[in-house]
Length: 116
Image (cartoon, rainbow, N blue to C red; front, top):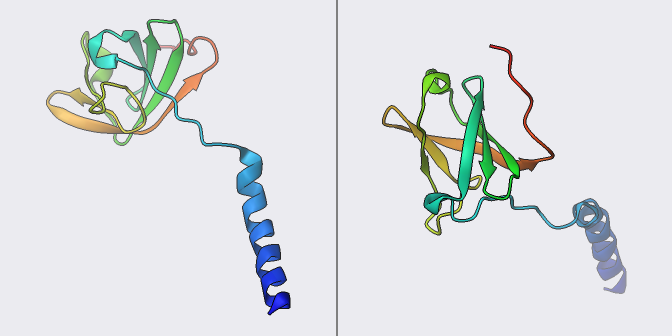
């Protein structure tokens, strides 16, 4: 019995160590995005949007599917979480189509300039 317990603990230690070493999962978001928390946005192709919050931090959102005419839009509708935050569970609405994010993360500095 004691050997089985020690073996179970050893297996748990091997499996859990990489997850614990990574630290807690990071949850990036823009608070109050539905009330002016987003100051500007820009696109990079048809699947990536960069958002700037009112504290001048930039975030990169990757879309689940392409939004082919998003580069020609002057306005962008965002679908936030019920609390009003823009995060990885949010989406954009382009020409009446809701396109969810596959990822949303804060980036260091400004986004790269795109060559058009």
